[in-house]
Amino acid sequence: MKKIKKNTKLNQECTNCFSPTHIMFNFSFVNYMENLDEKHKAQLVNRMFELSKEPYLVVSNWPKEIGWENVSVKINKQIDPKFYESENRSFDGKYTIIRLYTNNNPLPSRIIGKMLNKIFYVFFIDIVSLN
Image (cartoon, rainbow, N blue to C red; front, side, top):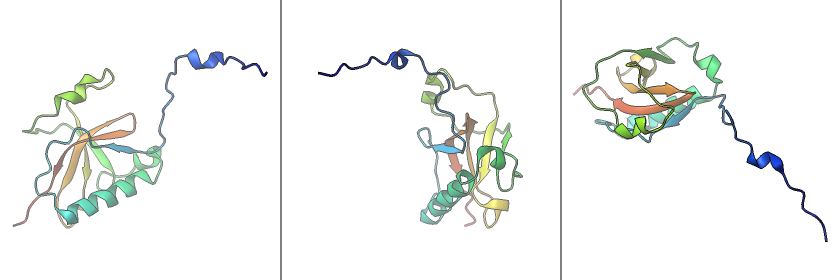
């Protein structure tokens, strides 16, 4: 009969075990997606691919027209309170804004959320309707 060697490393607490190198998207806290039709959903997926195929450090240096920006904007909608339940999440008054269409062409629409630890938490998808 073989003896099983006890692994003492299993009891050690992991610090910073998960450190992504690329942007990840979290849709758990979306509470506003008015005017989001199939065409815009397809564009949303395309933008997610564009932003997540390159390393975070590369994308973070892109201009705001194709990357993102962190700005203080007045939003009349409330962020889902569950976002704050995690001990590592806080809100400093600035939102991260990604343009749904680069250079706002054909529509000045945006994805509004918060970038924390290379994870983009989506709060609102603001589609401008030209009708």
